[in-house]
Length: 397
Image (tube, rainbow, N blue to C red; front, top):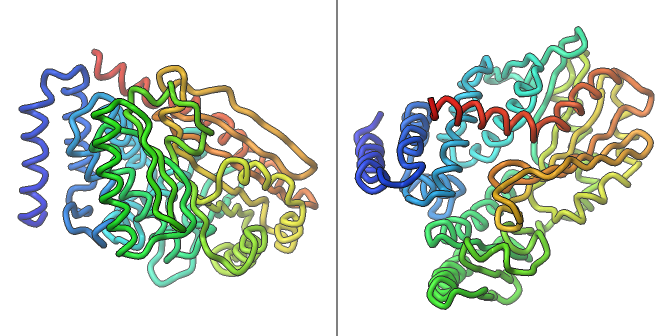
């Protein structure tokens, strides 16, 4: 590990040893930081990593904040990393944490690998340099199944959008506040600098006057901020407080972009004549839009054009931490099926939520394969809670 990384991690550890020792989760929180250091320390570069507002800064802000909900997030993140280490080929995922433009991909590939593993589906990462191969290979229904994980957004849009949202999330976390709102576009550097200044001012006002504060960058962002412990008292739509939605400029409607993604990935990464599944993440839809994907029947035709494609899964993640009336307690899973399409919506620990839409092959190809993965999605909230509970039980011994 380079000297600057060693110095950074040593400083973080000493801060938590000195100031976090009297906090309820201070000791397990410090252990979690040590775990993150062990797993990511030689790959991930804090301070000056990527662009000034890159998504990894959210992780950096988490590492430096002594705050009970933040300790819980760190403990859970460390447990996810430990679980990732149990999936063969995990090194290819961890290596991406050190590359600014691949960081979003690392998060997606880690997340879906954990969905499979926690559902007791045997899998491995199958990265091969210079060869178009799927991200994961799984054993399902006695078959070897190729699984490709990608994003609906173009890489540049994905990175720029995540950078902008990360800047505000970081400011809110450091100020022990919750922020959320609507982005009309990814901001320019000048616009983002103005937004950062407005966000700092809004956080200070919210903390000092104990109230909800709104601020606006005309044509770019409408944002609300309030203290974390007041969030449940604020009446706001679920995607206004605790998460952001962003319009990403595209020439094609999302259903057409999804169809093109299916065609491209089906011909490239999923062309080995094995049963396969395409998993597409979309971070920039609001929940109402995500729920509407189950009505997009025409996507089945794109799936049906590939005889080996068991199905396509669109995963829309959200952050809704502050909106839970009870202490980060998952709500029941909601499921809706229309012909060959199924929507699954659920809450996760740490205030995360997901809406997943599954399109099956219209001719029923490899039906048992996609159904097994769908069961894993439905069970993910329970499986993830069990993973965290096992960790807590270990810490309590």
